[in-house]
Amino acid sequence: MAPAPFPVRFVEFAPYTDGGESAVYPDRLPFRMVRTKRGKDRLALRPARSSDGDALQTYVRALSPQSRYNRFLGGASELPASELARTLAANGRDTLTLLLTSAAEGREIVVGEARVALSCAERAGEFSMSIADDLRRLGVGSALLEEIERKAAADGIEWLFGDTLRTNVGMIALALGRGFRLEPGLEQRLLRIQKRLEDATPDLPCRKWAEIAGATELHGA
Image 1 (cartoon, one colour):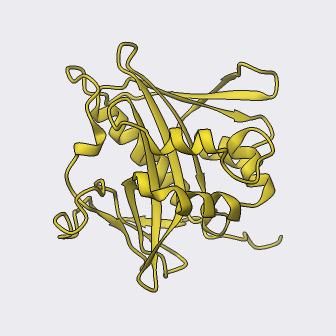
Image 2 (cartoon, rainbow, N blue to C red):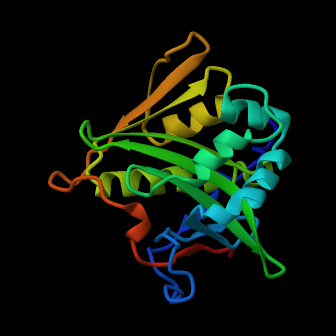
C-alpha cells in the first residue's frame, strides 16, 4: 500500500490571542493561531481595505485556472472592475470581505479571501472563500471556515451556507469535514453546502464585524 501523501494532522491549534499587536494592527480580527507542518507560514486575517485592489487582483491572477473557475463559478482571469469595487466596498455590518495575508520580506501578500453576506432578519449568512494553491491541504482552509463559523455564530447567525460546483471536490470535502450538509443548488451544476450553527448567540442582532478588537495571527511552527 502506498503511503499517505499528507500527515493525518495537518495543523496544530493554539488558543485565541491578540499577540500584543492590537495597537499596531487595529483592523485585524481575532484569529486562532495555526502552526502548519510546512513551518514557514505567518498568516493573519483582516477585513479588506479600499486600498487592497491591486493586492487582491494579484492574488486572483495567481490562482490556477481551475481554482479561479471553482471560486467564481466560471472562467475569469481576474475580478471585473465592478466586482472588485463591490468586494472592497463591503460595509462590515451585513457584508464583509476578509483577506488572509502572509508577511514575506516585510511585505504583506494576500494568500486567501472570503466573502460573507448576512441576512440579519433570517439569521442566515452566505459565504464564499478561496485559498492560494500552495496553501492547500495544510488545514488553512478549514481554519478559515471555522473562523467564519465562529464569528457568524457570535453575531447571532443560525444558518451558514454557500454554493459550490458539483465538481469542486476540494470545497465539498472541506465543507463535509466541518459538518456541512449537501443540498441541491439553484442550478444543476451547483450544490448548496449548509450548516446550522448550534452555538449561535440567541439575543444578539448582526453587528459590525469590523469593530471587533484584537489582532491575532496564524504562525508557522
